[in-house]
Every structure is written in structure tokens, then in C-alpha cells.
Length: 112
Image (tube, rainbow, N blue to C red):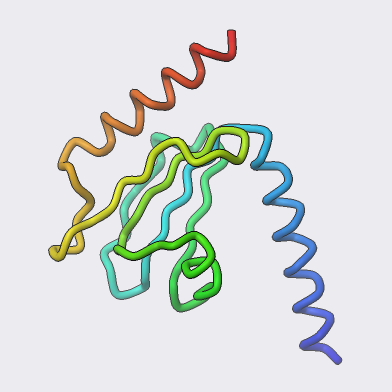
């Protein structure tokens, strides 16, 4: 029973988070625990979420994540940009932070 209640609470929290994110800019980091973590603090002003394959494998299948790590930028629930790693487990291209920032700036400029 306790497991069921915990699962139910986790489900409602996930639904609440996902419904909130559909109305804004969201940066999602998909990775695994064996990969070096990437700092995304410069994007903390946006809806920032991290998913690890070990914890949420169904999310990776649903979102068709093939490479780790992967960063996806969403605007109002629509995928705008997907940055994927290569065999070295490093995001490509090397200036991915600049590319992500530029896309966010464009999205912000279109709101006004």
C-alpha cells in the first residue's frame, strides 16, 4: 500500500510539472549516472529538468532519446532544439551552450 501511495504521489507531481512546463521555455537534460554530469546553472531561470536513464527509462523511450547525454529545448511543449552527444559521450558541437543560449534568446525576443 505504501508503495502504491508513493507511486501515486510521484505521478501527480510529474503531471503538475509537465503541465507547468508546457507554457514556458524548458530545458531537459537526459543522461545516465555513469556519465559525467553537466552543469546547467546558466539555464536555471527556465524550467530545467534532469532525467536519468536508470530512474526513468520509459521517458527515454517515449522521447526517442538515442544518445547520452542529450539536451532538448522546448517552447510551450514544442521541441525546438535537440543537442546530442557522440560516441565520446560529450555533447556536440563543442559550443552547444552558445547554441542553446542563442535559441533561448530568439524565443524570448519573439514573446515581446
